[in-house]
Image (cartoon, rainbow, N blue to C red; front, side, top):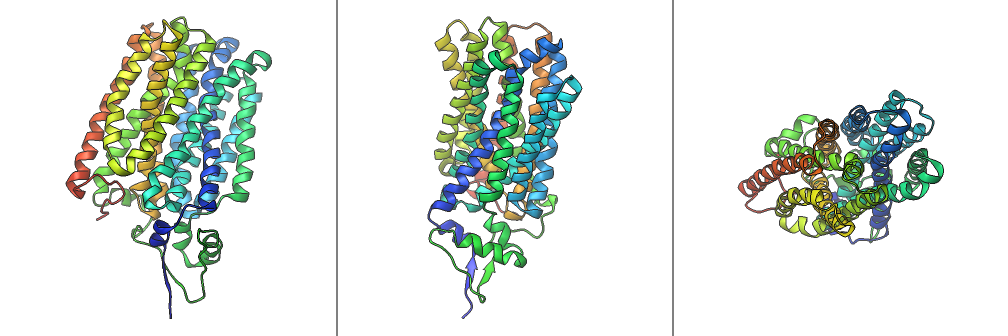
Length: 449
């Protein structure tokens, strides 16, 4: 008798076990290295500008080069991930940005630094969509958003590390030590991923010639699943006719995809405005370099807590926690401008801002891995990250321009607050769309036609 193995049913009915936790830990490490590399430049920037006699406005281009690389790398490696596998693109991205970051140690000019940041950005951007897709395709539906967000907390914890290294190691070894660490770590993690990371079961199930690799992964399930010669594989209900990018706009996704892009762009404008310039902004208001580094680390830790809270709420309440965080994020950012008179006030404001803004980004990352089907999941997530990077490029450039106008800290912080208010409007529109087409708030059941 022929046995039919439905991949969707298998994934949704599985128990969490060693394979799931191994995937989560490895993905967490990959994201942790990502988060470190994204923020290391912000801590090194004041020393580089001083040593190389570079103005703030000119250095904004270095920040944006890395973000431009992410813009290109996310859809490019996301597309390749849908074609050649999630695992291979995660490993490739880790090696690319490890090499790019390590090269900064020997960079001697602004142009070389800019080129290396672009290369690193390509790798960083490439890791994210395939990691989202891989975790989404292993997680049971009831745990999907939670596991994706927990994996992404590695970014904020990794982003908290450069502050500690900057405070303790730059005085001893100079700013290049940040990039020596930031380059070596992803190279080591890349080799670890190549050895231990499993390939997506849903990706393997789509093509018959991958059956042997699929069987090897299924044997690691909890409980193990064994394939016989007669077993037929049903790839599931999440596939579409092709992996064409046009399917990002099929049916209800025609409205969902642009709204998701706008949510990514507005939140990342605010995120990278603060990530890139927060130490400089606080320095202008009289906060010491050590306190600025601590505040940015608290910002990242607050984001980790925000992500954990969102992971609990997102599967149950859909867009409502996303809207709430967008609404709260603007006032939280503005509070940074009034907290510089006391260290405790500054740390509290930084933690609250990180909780809202970075916690919000965790939720958006999870959504990008939930609403798309398997055949375009990495591509859909990659394009969301890429379009969002237009916002992350605009944020640092806008910050550099506003700094050149010699505005006060409070005036400068109105820019990210406006970005976040725009995102709140887009989030409400997605909630309305959710209820119109589904009658409820679930985000993983959008009809594709």
